[in-house]
Image (tube, rainbow, N blue to C red; front, side, top):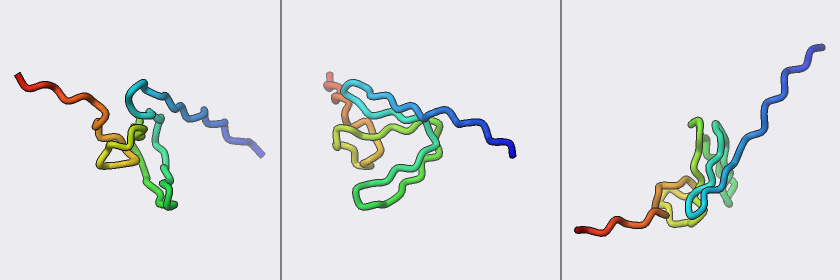
Length: 68
């Protein structure tokens, strides 16, 4: 019986001061056991917990631009 080729491992890259970038698609499971389907080719997971879309990043970690 032929075996299917092994899928390459998913890559997760930590961005200094930013999110955890995961090659998608991926399923995220939150602390309550809820499953979040992410079909994008790359998913940004919030590491600072400032995101209003937590656990997904909404770029809240970026410094605000000063008004001139």
